[in-house]
Every structure is written in C-alpha cells, then in structure tokens.
Image 1 (tube, rainbow, N blue to C red):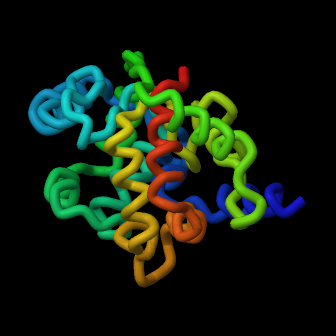
Image 2: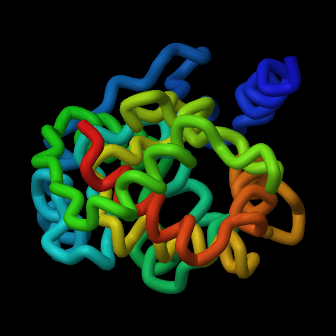
Length: 216
C-alpha cells in the first residue's frame, strides 16, 4: 500500500516532462528528430555518443532511456534543480521543444549492453536490487526501476546496461546531498533517492552498480 501511494505521489507531482511535451492547445508536441540529430552532433556526442552509448564510463549511457525522463532531466539541469555545472551550460540554449526532441531521439537508440565483471558483487547486488534490505529500511530497487532495470517513463531511469562507474557516482551524490536535495524540494524523485542512498554502504552501492551494469 505504501509503495502504491509513493508511486502515485511521484507521478502526480512530476512537473517538467509533462509540461514540455505539450504543443499548442495542449496537443502532444511532435519531436523534431532531425533537429535533435543536429544538437546531438554539435553538443551531446562527445560525452554521450551519437547513438547514446557513452564512450566514457564517467558519463551516462542515454540510449533506451525513457524519453520523458530525459526531457525532465534536461529541464532540471537548465533550471538548476539538478546541479551540474557542465550540463547547466549544455542545456542553457535548449528550448522545451529541443528537450522533447532529444528525449525522443535517445529513447529510440539501442543500448549496446555491458557485462558485469565481479561475481561476488553481482550476487550481493542482485539480492539487494530484488529484495532490498529490510533491516536497514532499504526497499527493493526493482519496485521502481523494474525487474530488468528498464525503468518507468517520466519517473525512473533505465539502469540496465548503465556504466557502473556512473551509477556508483550517482548513488554517492545522492547520499552526500549533491543530487536530489534542491532547496525548493522540486526534485521529488531525487528526494526519495537521497533517503534511500543515505542507508546504503559503499559496498552496497558498488554491488548495485555492478549488478545493474549487466542487466538486459
């Protein structure tokens, strides 16, 4: 029951993607994929790849992420809700239509997939991802990110095949309050993650990052 109420609250309060995806008279905007390709080539490709598969483990793979999630995160970067100096600059000139188009573009790209390397960490990560840690009050990651790490459009990102280094860094950022702790409390999902990450040990974070890397 609590999880149902939590998910309902998140979806009800999700601001950015829904607004940005509206065209005139409230009609869904038609993403300009040709313009998105130009923006990708000029701005995004160096860090995220032209096909959304990042050449660097420090930068996230965007291929296959839910379009609405990408759109919303771009809006958060531009407004400063999600603090990141590099992405603040990259998103500064993007319009709402550009963000919608980029979300649609990367959602259509095919993730290449990555392989986990540490069997012991994978075992620990799998148990935590699927079942949580009741003793520490940590919910199962699969409840929001899906059993296969595919995520939920608008709300929760795809974790399957994400660079482990990036996932680990983001979990640490949530725990440190460097992400998901905007002063106005507009990043509801981020606030949820800061509460969860605060209970995770470094080993648990590494295990989750390793396990989700190998998900398909």
